[in-house]
Image (cartoon, rainbow, N blue to C red; front, side):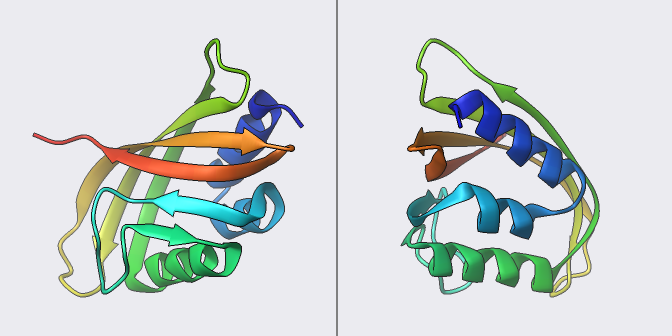
Length: 124
């Protein structure tokens, strides 16, 4: 699959609330995931499909997601990258404080699978 095809499938699954299915079907076994910072005792950089699944399971277990919009994929000249923008209406279970967050995922595709994801957050 091309990066555009992977991006289309990833965005569609996320829109349907099937983020774990996206990881299970579209990610490489040796995927690298990079967040902006360490959180909840997890490092910002994680390697391997099991680590990425664990991080995502933690997210879903500890947050009530009211809605998620996934826009994309945005593609450019590079044949192996795409971006998806996420807008999430979420309540962390620990605080109960509902908020809206926006982030983009910058994805690298190799051999038809997501080889790396990096999340960038709208700040300020």
